[in-house]
Amino acid sequence: MNLFYALLPFLSSIVSFVFAVLVFRRYVARRGIHLLLWGVGMVMYGLGGFCEAYYGVFGWNPLVFRLWYLFGAMLVAAWLGQGTVYLLAKRKWANGLMIVLGLASLYGAVRIFGAQLDPAQMSSSLHTGSELSGRAITTPGIRSLTPFFNVYGTITLVGGAAYSAWLFWRKRVLLHRAIGNVLIALGALLPAFGGAFSRFGIGHALYLSEFAGAVLMFLGFLRATTPMKDLEERAPEQAAG
Amino acid sequence: MTGNEEKTKKERKYPELYEKLIPCVLGIIVVAMLALLAIAVAVALKLLPGVSY
Image (cartoon, rainbow over all chains, first blue to last red; front, side):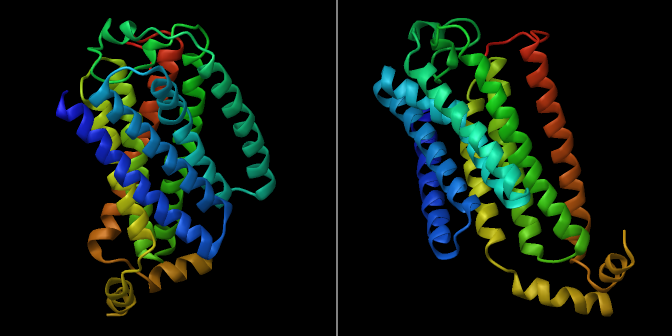
């Protein structure tokens, strides 16, 4: 067992589940579909990390692989991004996109759970087999679905957080939310880059980026939900002085 | 920018560090996001080598 390939995703999983609990608590207190979807998204993130850690400790298991691919590789970014869509877009647009995402997710799940798998493929080509990889899916037409989910997720989650930060910055209000959204955007970008580096056979990239991404998004959430009273009260005085 | 927004901006200011840091980082994020999307399109069109994730 390689400690790196077990411990790092396990830590990502722990951070994600703690993050999900805090988001769900906020949802219970304040409501808002965006909070519910972010909580669901972070549970998916945590499941993905848990499956990677399982593979690192116990090795290949087809059910664990299918869960990993569905939640960790295919759906997580899109569902997190859908939360941001509910926060920023008009409700009718958000509802329409939610229906499309829900149906697409169902279709993806059916395809993944019905797919032929060959774990030996993960050790071929650029990969060493130390990290989970979609190469294990040998049924055609499934891995080509994943970029659609991830592009949608990246645009909505990263773009939405960056747009929110820019709005706060332009109006010079709620500094803690501006910083929090910048951290969330950075954190959401990292796993996307990790996935891209993984494509080109750069070892460790995926698990490292997932861990760093979970930590940054968690810090961003904490920052965005915790006002910086001293700095934000002093700012108008500085401007006046 | 509307007159009200201009007035608000003059009245409010973030601390110096954040005034400059936030737009710089946002610029980097936008460039990085565009690069990622370009990679995704290139891989989908099989213009780049590498394994499919």
